[in-house]
Structures are given as structure tokens and as C-alpha cells.
Image 1 (cartoon, rainbow, N blue to C red):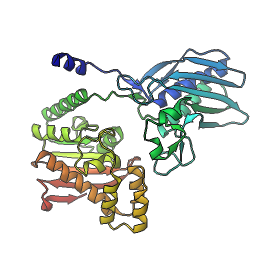
Image 2: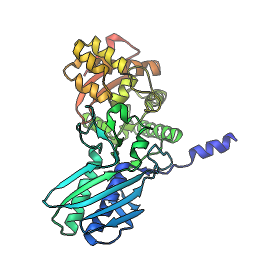
Image 3: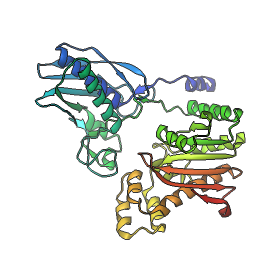
Image 4: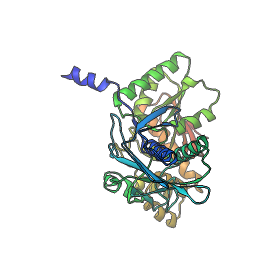
Amino acid sequence: MEAKMEAKEEKPLRYGYTTGANATAATKAALLALIHQETVEEATIMLPIGQEVTFTIVKCEFTRDMAVAEVIKDGGDDPDATHGALIQSTVSWLDTPGFVLDGGIGVGRVTKPGLPVPIGEAAINPVPRKMITETVEAVLADHGANRGVKVIISVPDGEEIAKKTLNSRLGIVGGISILGTRGIVVPFSTSAWKASIVHAINVAYETGCRHLVLSTGGRSEKYGMEVYPELPEEAFIEMGDFVGFTLQMCKRKGIEKVTLVGMMGKFSKVAQGVMMVHSKSAPVDFGFLTRVAEESGASEELLAQLREATTASYVGDLMMQHPLFFEKLCEACCREGLREVKGGMTIETILITLKGSLLGRTTWSGENNESDRHRG
């Protein structure tokens, strides 16, 4: 029985596609239907990772001035709350040149600061916005259609689906968010991801790397590469949410120094000693962040704002004028990392914003040794 379970766990998992990718495909289909005045059954788009994917259009209707296309989101082998959701795009001509993108039924509206979308706008994140915009521009150019276009993204069951998410706490009301930075949904396979981490560490060590840069995602990895351009490609490893496991594997392999690069949400957890930082494993502790802010000299007025915060990135925005706050968080990450591996290595923490700006940077060596601390 155990062997069967292990075999099932190790079976390669199938990727899914983000709500942003689905919305883009539906938009392309609707725009093509509007231009050609004929039903479109599939649409091929380019994902941000450089991969072409063809989506099946489950419904397509059009008139002379408007077209509607629908796709069903496939979450792959790690379905989330939006798996199976109907994503709809309504495309219509404008009387004047230009492009308008908005959310319809089931797409939430942003009501609080701290998110990558301004208050009042539809919760369509920057990368999906870019995907949809560029796709519309490319289709218009290919067909010589120099006209203004309006796109409305809707998710008919979005308001109900949103009840299964944290959207209301984040200040997104009325539906779900249209998300995705890569276009694909990578299945959350613990064993598969850990195996890839071990493999990457082994390769790095065998190629002579003794300093590894561990990132939580693509944007943080890119920042790490900019900080350490002299390091070979093998030195950069995407650890994802497995901070503790990756540190332990580095220590076991004999890596002398690791640089952790990440953002407020995940690293605020590491600072507390939480070494598995997936959103389903541990929520952001805003009480902890408020205490650190208080220790950093934040005013009572600012502390009151922090207590009402809904995202860690918003906390970071509020604390931009208090560099000591970020230094303390970085120090805590280093300290907890050293505690996780019981010392014997150097840990550097680099904390950045969602847009890739430096918030804090600190290095600790040894095991919680105050004399070995270095500020970046």
C-alpha cells in the first residue's frame, strides 16, 4: 500500500493555466469573432514564460458590434477554488481610438490599498492586464483593424467562488481576481519540488558553488541575479515555499553561504521561525509585524494603520520611512535560518518589494552570534 501511495505521489503532475491566461484566450477569440463575424472554436496565445498554448472556446457569440467568448479554467492536478470556473470576455468596438479593460460580473473590485491594482479598479493583476492588452494590439495589427476596443472580463460564478478565497480580507469585493505571472499553474507537489531542490543543490555543489542564492519565486530570483552577476547560473535555486528544507539540504551538502531573497509576505513568516511559507500552511501574522514596527520606532498613528493592514506588502509600503524595521526583519530571518540548521554557515537575507526594490539586507554568520552580524 505504501509503495502504491509513493508511486502515485511521484507521478508527474499536469500543469494548469491561470485565470489571466484563460481571460486572454477568451479575449482573443472574441476579438477574432468580432473581426471575422464568425464563430471561433479555439484560441492560441503566448504565455509570459514563452510557451504557446491553445485553449478550447466553449461558447462564442457575436453581433456586428460585440462578441462574447468563454473558456473553462483548468487548474491541472493542483486545482484551486477557480478550477472549472467559466471565464468570459466581452469585446466591443469603441467609437474612438483606444483600449479599455474592465471587470464585469464576478470579477472583484479593489477597495483597500496594498494591492498591485489601484483602489476602485477591477482586480485584474498587472501581468494579465499586459497579456490581454498585448494580445488585443497584436490581433488588431495582424488584421489591419485600426479601431478602439473595449474588453470586459467576467466570471459568472465569481462572487460565489470568492467566498472560498481571502479576497474579502484583502479588500477585493464582488468576485475573484484575475491572476497569474507565468500563465501556468504549477502543481503543488511536495515531493516533486523537494526532489528538484535537492537535485539543484547537488548540481551547484558539483560545479564548484559554495555560495547559493535561494529565492521564493521568479522575481526574487531575478533580483538575486542582479545582485550577484558573478555567480554561475547553477548557484541560483528557486526554493519556493520550502525555506527550512532547502537550508537543511544546503547545510548537509556543505554549502558555506546562502543568500535568501524574497518579499514581505513569505519572509515575515521566516522571521518568526516558520520555515514552510505556503499560504495554506501559515497566514501572515500582522501582530508580529506591528510589534517589530513598534520596536523600530513607529508612531502610534502608524501602528494603528498597521493593525488594520490586510497584506504584508502594504505593511512594507507603510514602513518605507523606517529602515530599521526592514533591518530587524532581515536579522530575524538570518537568526531563524541559522537556528534551523544549527549554525555552521553564513546566511544573508535580502528583502525586496513586489516591484524589485531593496527594502533590507543583512548577513549573519555562525549561530545567532551577535558579533558576526553584518548589515548590507
